[in-house]
Image 1: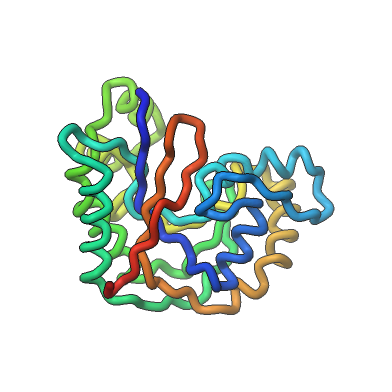
Image 2: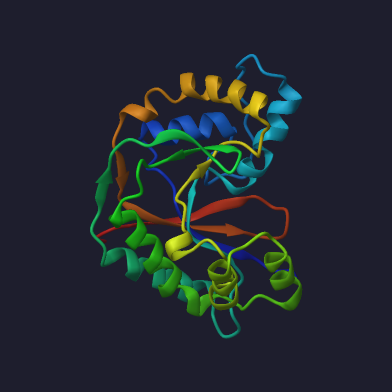
Length: 230
């Protein structure tokens, strides 16, 4: 399947310590597909590039509405207008500093614990923007359902196109691929040092970010940031 994909993400505000940490670690700013040099942190450079490759392609973010292609009859302009209206009617809020954590073998920045405000934002994004999502085709559904999923997760794939929504939602900002225990410990030690300022600063939820992927294998790029409250 070809064509652009879109996603609604949380991406930290540009002037935040969390943004600076994530951009530096992944070597990429969310609004620019160009790659920047990765930080020199005493790790094997080739392996370091491989470890961050997937996270780098998606940009430093947390998913609110997973990537989707536009349904027939929907246009990018309508999606932009819907995102702007959605954000205008939400109030900004702040969360305690995120922490470096492990999730299913990879490392990420996460809230500890997930707050009702973040969960409500994600749930509302999944529901509100689903009218723009083209339903998954047979191949994509088979690929999703071939994973090790619970019955509820399988049901969410059928209804929402993605297993990790609502009660299954795990807010996270990915920093690495899956790593074995020894390598994970090495990367955790490096990231703990780099993330000091980010783990000391409250996180502002002031906007909703619309990301776009122009074609398969292209990076996801921040298309527009919509301020909460207009």
